[in-house]
Image (cartoon, rainbow, N blue to C red; front, side, top):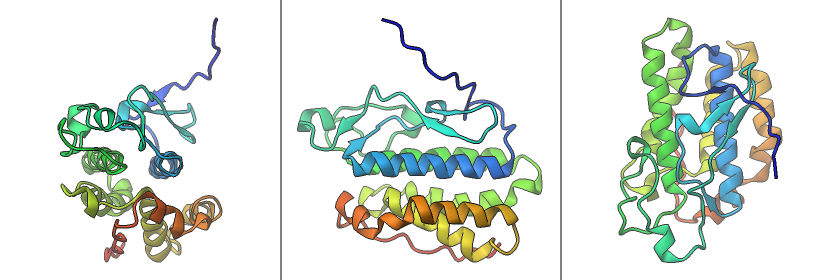
Length: 209
């Protein structure tokens, strides 16, 4: 049997030729993918730049490689496996702790941090992006998984930060905010609570862009 699949030429490991608009859109789409998976009770467990493919026009991101993914209801032994890529791996992935959605959030934060570091070596054209992503990355990388934001809260944070600080300065932000409202935020806080009712809300950033 042969499967014919879409050809997606780029991944986040490639050189940063995407514009700041496209890169921010990509990270929003990755967060949305996590939100969808977590709503279905699936933990990806290998979020990293290499597993984010991007279309030729840098408009659409696709999360790939579900070989290590597991249901949150899997047997304890499966959820304790030491899996994933080391530099993106959450501290609780140690072979003795049951893993939850927080491992994906940590990996997402590690990916954000790498992007911020790469952007810092580029022109100031990316300064708005790094100011948005840096505090989010820090929150995602909290050693305690219970202190990390949920996938829903990541979307909410990006929405709040973009809308409050940039909507009047950057024309492209308005359409992105509207897209988030229509496709993500309308699902409500109740969805995030179903992921884990004890997860705290992510505090709003005080950054002024």
